[in-house]
Length: 142
Image 1 (cartoon, rainbow, N blue to C red):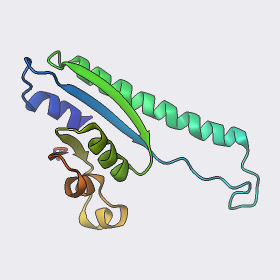
Image 2: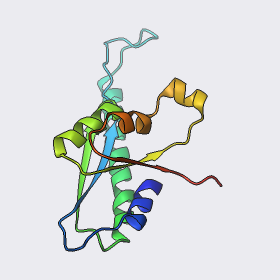
Image 3: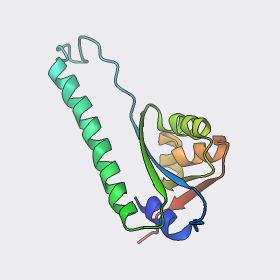
């Protein structure tokens, strides 16, 4: 959310041109369920449905908060919301290319080198892979 606010505040938009701001949220890929979980118990359809419902509610919540931020900036011409599913770094780059995006503005968690090495960095991957300019917005340290 910080990257979105920063982008809307600091990137100059020519109001005479047609711009579309695309808010993108990537859900983790759906889990592949076997009929038995690790403990040997059946993984019921109600549990699977609850996990999927939680994923949808989380995406709706994120998009709702992003919309509230955008409402504070009347200079935005058009907003589109897209929710994808899969590995975030690959999916973001895939969608950027498909849409022919002019720029990607992405936030950074600010992980240290050890955490980044273990978890990977979506923003770092996108900066190296995306076919458009990438602006990584770091959250200020407090």
